[in-house]
Amino acid sequence: MCRIIFVREKKEIQVPEGTTVLEAEIRAGLAPDAPCGGHGICGKCLVRILSQKDGDRADAPGSLVRACRTEVRSDLWVDTCTDPEQEHVILTEGFTRPVPCQPDLMVHLVRLTKPEPGEKRSDWERLLLALQAAGGPEPSWVRPDPVLASSLYERRQEAAEWWVIHTKTQILDLRREPGKQYLAAFDIGTTTVAGYLLDAGDGSQTAVVSRMNPQAQYGADVIARANYALTNGTEPLSRCIRELIRQMLEQLAAEAGVRTEEIFQVSVAGNTCMHHLFLGISPASLVHAPYTPALRQSLVLSAAEYGLGIHPRGQLRVLPDIAGYVGADTCGCLLALRPDQRPEVTLLLDIGTNGEMVLGNRDRLIACSTAAGPAFEGARIECGMRGAAGAVDHVSFENGIWHYTTVGGQPAAGLCGSGLIDLVACLLRAGLIDESGTLASGQEDPRVFMLAPPGESAREAGVYLTQKDIREVQLAKAAIAAGISLLMEELGISEDEVACVWLAGAFGNYMDPASAAEIGMLPKSLAARVQPVGNAAGQGAKIALLNREEWEQADALAEQVGFLELATLPTFQDCFVDELGF
Image 1 (tube, rainbow, N blue to C red):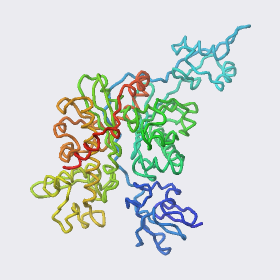
Image 2: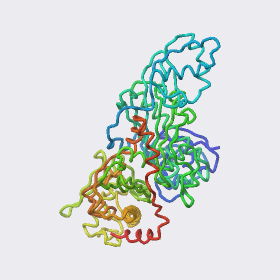
Image 3: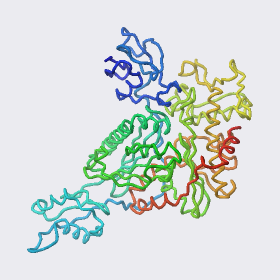
Image 4: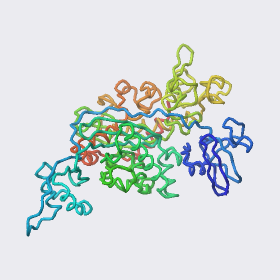
């Protein structure tokens, strides 16, 4: 066994000789950034190995190595070269529509009566009849609960009147005082997780929290994580995301000044892979043709069985997946936007590591997914990074002068998705990239464009774009453009018939539509019709809790949406190749 001391985090762990430094970071709970899943490709997991005499200094010199390729052979002092306090910009706001606050969580006052001599009905049956008389559900709808039933005799001895907290099909608690009840909704994204606490009485939002998804230590994209799960089992990925949700629930409750036991329902939306990994379902069916989910329907589960730490009988409600890689997050977006109720044709785009899109109106809706890859999240881009302090988020080129802005106004540390798209668009306009995507920067190395030189950058080598980065952008934008084109072809409509383009997610919220059109990711005629809708998936997860009719309609809505599997279309490869050029 060898000791590993992580000097910035002030953590120490013992690992067997031969363990990689990346594995040691994961075991220590550091959630390192490893976009390629530890395959030695991305170069993002760099750490500094310090000498023993400098082991207590984070600023000490040392050799810079890839954590995933460095095996532990002796005691090590390691500088992870990351700021533990660094905050990422995580989008939590989004477009939503008002719905009546009528959750499937109700409270009624009932009177527990003594049975008459010779009466056939049980204590449980009399409780259900009393609940129905108070305005509750039909007794036949409610599932019997042996644990609660066993307490009814003692409760009846204690007092006659009790407040029943229940749903349409389940009694969750009996209390002497009604108290307050809360609901929590989560959007589990591949990169980030957003959580919302809602008052079940009036639907008001009482707290919001957001975190980075710790599964990133197993890979930046869903395919990398699915492959990790197939090799190592789902448990490591399931455990870390469930633990994060539990921590976020505690933070939500603390910020609202309530106890976690007062949270009775939690809803979750995520893409199909995040959905499966959260539930502990093998993603094998997702990564092998014909790429179908193992389970698609909405679910009502015991929150306790997933370690969420809310009310002991609290519910975990999972929105339905639609098909393949069109997941519950897309269903959440549809609940927030309801294109199925609109006469005009709309296009919903959620661009992340996986591009999900839905085109149509109340007559017909059809969805598809495209493997855009993690380039827009900063992975596979040499100076790529997520939206944190110092990330270049916008670039412009005016009168021969380059300008850029960064998150938080900090020195440039890398390129996030919106800055990457702007930079490529500006290089095209400046004539430094040709139609084939070949870069001729006119700088010292014509295959590299230096945006922020080392002297003015927080990055030792400066912030720049390489020819390889441009190829990654071409692959990602071509996948999105091909998906849009083939959806329109399937519905038999032209660009002119699309009234609105909804851009969901953080990347869509910050991206300049004109830049996206310039590089060919969006048809140019649609750029003026773009409307960012923010975290619509999170808003849909809230709606599913706030209104029981919306929750009940979620499965029907998911079923209504048709699915176009691009991989099976003979025309997809040709369309994709056509879209690669600028």
